[in-house]
Length: 325
Image (cartoon, rainbow, N blue to C red; front, side, top):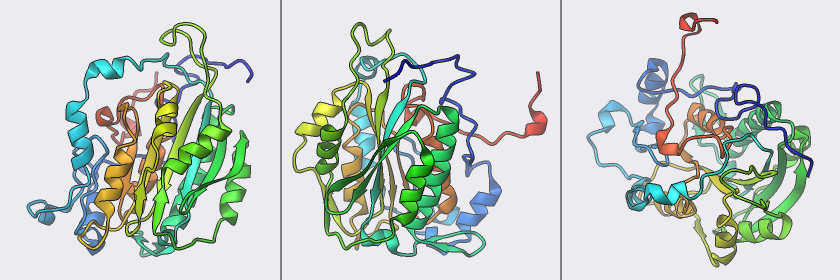
């Protein structure tokens, strides 16, 4: 690996990137609020952040009992100590990332569940592929040394593309991925087995709190199943990888509105269990394409530079009110 170029925070930073798409705050964006309130598809779900409590349910639904995907992670947050997080402190530099995109290709990804305000309908697979295209293009503009690999998920993980710093190669491969298959379960542990056999974690000789790594490894899980189950048959490989301060796991979970007829809660709880260090960004979206794009934009931030997910707060800025220095 060639020597990295950290640059100054203002010149070479993923902490506050010039993102292709923006985050919308439902409390301050009446257009998005109206979009959700007038769309009956959103009436039975609560979409909250992995470590936040910003409910997006329509006003008429807020007093009704709703299934909460946050129970597992909120309990974990209350047990986590700040001292544990401080042990993972690394230099806040924009070193190259090796990003492993793990894309779900179960048949549930091929069902129409998303609808735009204009009435366009999208399958989760098509929408995620479009969001990934924007993510890859934007991430490469931030730092051309970032590399990307692709893993497909069915009942187990399969490595299909080795690391490349050319986002077009991954985008072309994504465009060719159309075939999905019926999957009753996913051994999520197989993801980390594949990664462990393909990726070498960086090692820093010296104080890791001072010396930056040559690169970090980030796994991005993009899951879209509500009826199947996911499980961790063996956690040994995962814990081996997760013991490194330079290994991160993020997730975007696309699902149906939680109900007694699906397994959204159990699946989301299993995903949240992967965040043993409290450093992950884990999102979930149900039928709202705008929210999915916004969450993918937040994943642009570099794991060594971004705040904890529970501390993030994005707001729309009026460019006319920003003083030009």
